Image 1: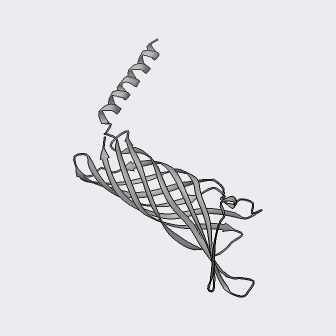
Image 2: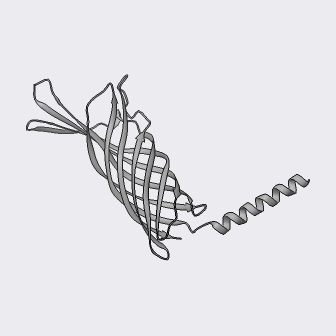
Image 3: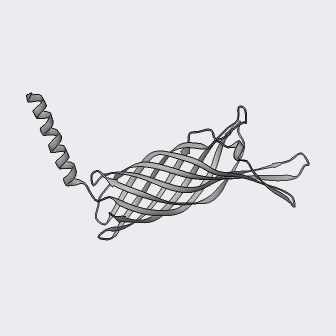
Length: 210
């Protein structure tokens, strides 16, 4: 019984401490660029595709230093490959992939004054919205839907760092740069070929305390 009472007291003190140190939640909007590419095995030389990122996020502050940030984002990904085709003509295939992504990041913040640097990492769950292939060979070009060749689900990890700038009592601006590592093979019906997305992401936005 004494041990149980002790445990209850510890839990109550912990809850009181957590609530006393908890900060307001904040909802935000973000936008930026996604410089994406793909890792292909067997090895194929590819070039990056630059697209946009647009989304919303929610900061849930457990302590002044620790924040959980789930979000929803529309992300443009893809890559291109240039080679000499069977007609001895230089051809470029550009894969345009659009995703709805759900990142869940754990942020470690370093509160200074009005500027708060942070590091973040966490999983990213993506749903493929569309997949198109643009092919250009000389003066000829064509576009086709290749959704049947792309897995509907993509999973990866995001590692990032950034800064929060307090500009008002309940308003902050933020800047974030990160690297997203794809863990899933997005290629479907391709035998032994594996294709994994990866990207450099640069975003910024505004958050409002709630």
